[in-house]
Amino acid sequence: MALIERKHGEEHPYWSAGPFKIRLPFIHYRWEAAETVQALIMFVVAMAMIPLLEKYLGLPYDVALAYVVVCGIGFMLPNLLGTPFVPGWITPAIPVVLLFIGQFEPGPDAIKALVGLQLVVTFIFFFLGITRLGTKLVDLFPSSMKAGILLGAGIAAVTGEISEGGRLANTPYALSIGFAVTAYMLFSLSFRDLIEKHRWAKIISSYGMVPGTLIAMGIGWIIGEYPLPAVEFGFSAPAFGDMWNYLPFTIGFPSLDILWMAIPTAIIAYIIAFGDIIVGQSLLDRVDHLRPDEKIEVNVDRVHIVTGIRNLIHSFFAPYPGLAGPLFTGAMATIAERYRYGRSAMDTIYSGAGVFWIVGFLALFALPLVTLFKPVLPIALSITLLITGYLCVSVAVEQVDNATSMGVAGTMGVVLAVYGAAWGLAAGIILYVLIEKRTKKALAEHAGEAPEEPIHIEEKAADYGNA
Image 1 (cartoon, rainbow, N blue to C red):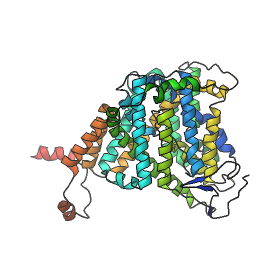
Image 2: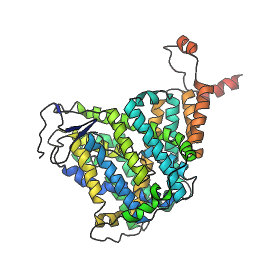
Image 3: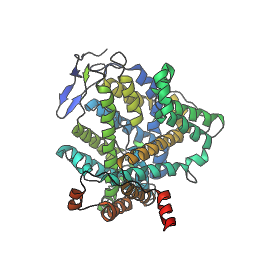
Image 4: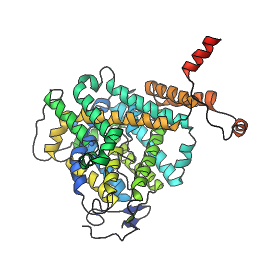
């Protein structure tokens, strides 16, 4: 039970602090058992960034773990400061970020590049949050270019896993089966039918990515694709002292040239992050009307500012390939699903979202859990990226409604995935201007008309044959 109770139909109690609304466990909201169990397993997703930190930044494992702890502090901030989302990385942007920092040698050069990128991202979030221009900026981008960004991120995410030398080649059975189970539970229409008919399916679905991740890990251990863990007891010891040697205060801050190079990638990351905000709002809208006992406030400006604070912390103390994003879609979806079943199931959206990452943070110091999952960290990252790639492609397709826009989006997406953010944005702008853009006069003349129909190859071939 919480010390401060919410009256029916009101916003959940908080302490006001300028633009923020502070809520603390036990004082403002109760502890949730279901999120505790889920977080004790899904914290491995947070640790899944370690392989990327080792590969692209050249960090030792213990220093990378210290970076993850800093990230865990950032994960707890949004709920504490009044945002009802479960925060995460800007996951769809990870492949694009890796393309950017992959141009630099692992070590100080790559760290400086990532610090530069994260500082630009920080500036974008702060500027647009304070000025309230976020929505207007994203609206300037045509739907075809938004789709191209998502397609590029999705293609890069999937190809990075399935290409030669990727994790699928190294662990084909664990990754294939784990992804298949996770995708089936998250996206399958037939599984959705089972949820409506059977309580067991509804219970399993409430744990989101957990079942598929555990199955993948179990298969990996059983058939030897991953080494068995050497479980240790006690508390983990992240190398906070050594971490100082890998921070900009020691190795130096990025040059203006690097900041300039980072701008295209930062813009793409922001656009994807803004899309996550929309997804988060949609998830809450689906359940909000089912809970008249609580009024949920989603303040987009506050989301921007809090996300900017998290990216600023990362810039100085733990530059992160995942950046700091507003939403962990998988966890948010499962928490929102449980929230819909009433106050007895979840007192407030803040108790579910808050407890999840508090437990996830504490789990980072539980040495038995950390050492248990250490050998299989790549599988958690792989499943996350594959699910992200699938979502990016499916959402991208929803952005366009005709063949011309699809052509622009598809071409831009391929260029972005192969050559990086700068070339991708340039290709998208050129293609949009040359192929899709119409004059105001033409738009007025054709106002109200349906978009052109997709081209049917069979019909065209028949026409040419008749000619």
